[in-house]
Image (tube, rainbow, N blue to C red; front, side, top):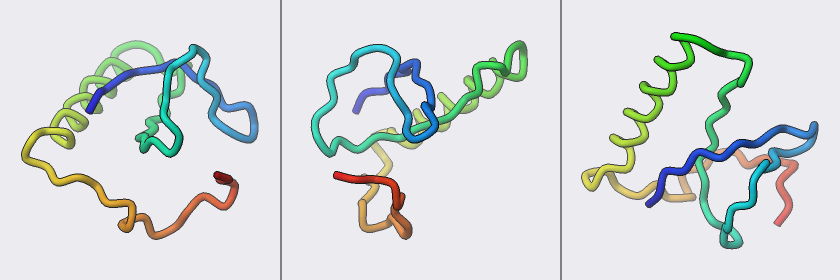
Length: 79
């Protein structure tokens, strides 16, 4: 498991990565939206809190998240 932060933007229909990144088809991702207009101490605190939560989530003591836990799918998603 790898934690990578990638710059991206929403084009009105989907999230688009701003820099190339190699992803496999159907690779599972977690997306965190952080408005880049948020600056200063609030942003730094939010990032630190998020990273702490992600580290706990992906520790060796946590079970894998099963896709069957998803209750509602995005109707716009097309494979």
